[in-house]
Image: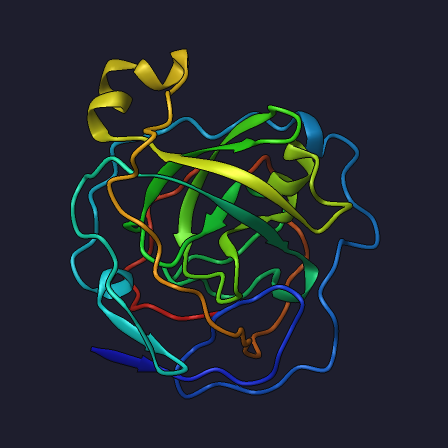
Length: 228
């Protein structure tokens, strides 16, 4: 069981690297100048990526709350609040070891296997996107997923900061068969429910310039879990 400590507080709950936790004074938010075509970014094409044993899928503890990430290729649906994280965390390590890009279509979830592909639907306007889960969070009451800035733009919740969404994890069978392209019906009785969320924290990691290439799904690096 890993015990991860967090420090500081931010509007977007994040996790931090063990042993490198420092409070940050700056607030999170949208980039000063964002690409004009974020709303038209193509969704990542789901791939059958092996669920990593250990690493970011090990049980962990944040501020006294225990979390046990799912280990198998399970069906999962969930409804709740979505938030997003932006420039403050751009370029930091995610739980998968990959660098977070606010211009990629990714997300953080407390217990879904890393990596996973998830359909996210804005219940207010019906907009749907596919995101790749490669991080842990959000650790904030009432929120079930933390989206990248680009994902929030596509779902039209970036301006509000939060929104109600429905999540549905794409299984390997759905990916192999192409069923995900025809739309996935959310299970009215979720296979699993999220662990009760807790207060957030963040850590210090250098920020890098935004990438120029269109974000695509990449195999996760061989890194242990971090909690940005």
